Length: 108
Image 1 (cartoon, helix red, strand yellow):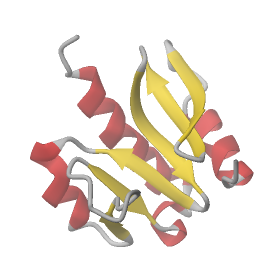
Image 2: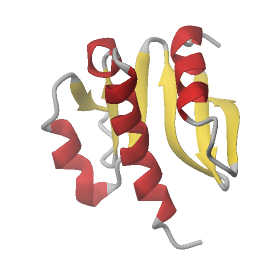
Image 3: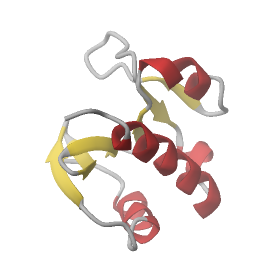
Image 4: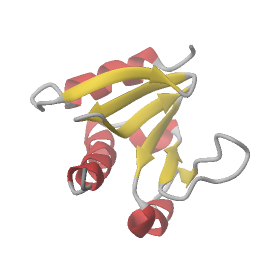
């Protein structure tokens, strides 16, 4: 599995004080999960963020984001963020929070 190890370390650092976070290798990359629900991940050098359908367009309006097209068809509710979109700890934290907020409000 190929994913950006530096980005993985940055995400781990950003999440160090959060509880119930796990990691799982999937999609050919690495996924970060809250109570078993994926909220972000890494595919190659891209950050993958789970936005949910209601925040999908809002996420796409942000610089350096694009539809997640893992299978060749965009998956509504997930976006990819290119490296320039998460190059600072603050920017990365905003994206992580975006995903965490979504899965925190999901029903079982």
